Image 1 (tube, helix red, strand yellow):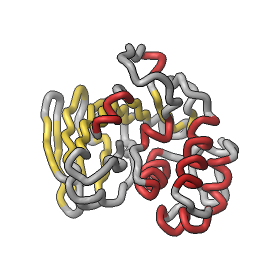
Image 2: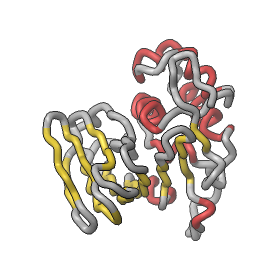
Image 3: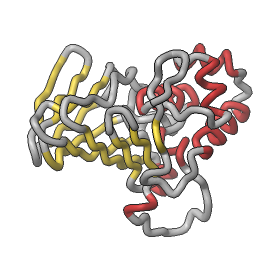
Image 4: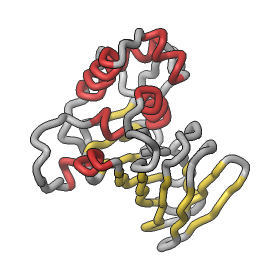
Length: 212
């Protein structure tokens, strides 16, 4: 499996998503240019190298969930926004094969946006799948006002909020304001699946939710 110069794993967007692999690069470029940012400025704001950002925008590489989250956070949008193809704002059914997703080809970590239309209301719903021994990666603190809720569907989840660790089993849930570093990792012997609900309606604008 090829990696970028910074050692970032390559991700597949096509396995579950209706969007093409090129969509995330197009959306990153469009949002960056709309904000009047250069690649170097976005690199400074996101912590992702300008080289990697250029490769993402040109669809040479797809970022990991962690790096995509950092890019979205710096652009003031959600990660699902970066995968969105756009279209009519009216009601629509999102079939299982039409979810906007990132799949880590090395670790098998999956992130599926479940309700992209809710983003217009400042709400994001995401389904994560963590294989045994894997983590979605450490994610930087969000802006004040964002509230998240996690419910475990299967397996055991270790949720790290700064220096605090919370172990959750099937059916367990927790609500928190992620104004600290967040990490989701599999703490069990089988696959861990959980749903993340993120509400940014009180954050003064759309923001990228922790892992969302």
